[in-house]
Image 1 (spheres, rainbow, N blue to C red):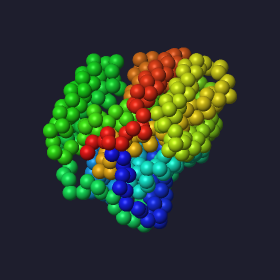
Image 2: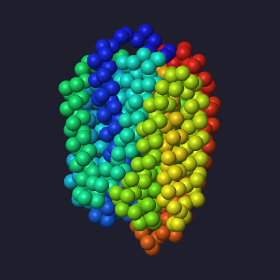
Image 3: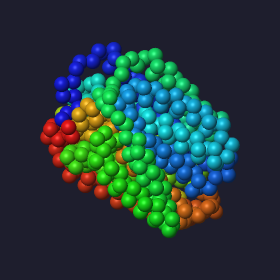
Image 4: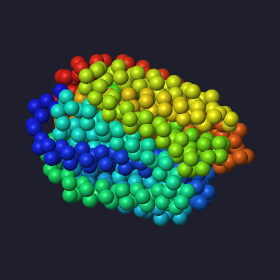
Length: 472
């Protein structure tokens, strides 16, 4: 059933408040991630971190967010999406401050885990709130605006991260996010009125949430160490845990994740899979290019930020338009076309050399950004349009989890190749040959993931025929 079937009218002022709060939140979290990429080299020098440990600064956040996003989505359906969103904003601000005060790698990694938990509360509510208050014929447009806010954060993040790092050090990035999180908390408290909890009265499956979290931790931590024997064992245990979780959810009366959403709804299932593969193929691009531009090309953090902001600038420019188009044109076609363009851009990066002109890097980032925009908004429209209202929080959580799982897979591949080629050595002049070899191998593998994503996007079926397919 379509998410907005028999959708009661919502006061326009409430809709405006939801758009303002959700889009501001959609801006903040990617701004943090994009700005931090430019501060990682300085953080590594200050806190004496290896290249692999720096990868974990990004991955710890993603791993935690992936573990908590679906459970928080279910909690939002039961206890209220505004409530979960508000606490997520508060915790995001608090743990950003803790990160800014970190004095060693251990404290930094712990604070990033807690920040990821807060991020999960935001990921699991924003898209669901927008889908709750807007009718189907406007869904693509408002989701396109939300995706644009995400990419504005990604566009502003690299330049701001480089500027903050150059003038205030890497800690300035976390202070800026603390201030943004504080503003967002105040705005959510005072501007966003009302509550949305279509599954109110249902119970929360605590044991299912614990099984899901444990299986996901084992699986993703194992994937990051897949080149080691312990990594293979943890990956196997994680897969077994996920199978156990699925059987548990099929028997429990109030599951954290209604697995029938996947086997009874191919549009939702393959759209979610396409999102996972897409982010697995793309997330590591900024991380690797940040290291390449600063350590290989010799650019300053601020200069690197200006180069990297070209991709999200294209995303922000085209996402809203792509979202509006997906209200009129089959989203499967638009998303698949976007994935093809993205895959070509990733493949071209596999030819990077130390002497590659920076202008070619910028041109390729522009191409990548356009492809990303034409995938993300139409795909989000397909995912949320395939669900009924009582599953919107879980659906938003699944969409966020697919993104986070893909990002974890992407960073896991990066850490595996960096560990194989560099070991515990930092990226620097003496390790440039090994670094460039790992960079090219990583981009070739990411391009293979892109091809897989195109196939997943094409086989989802027509989104226009989704009515009646949602789990009841």
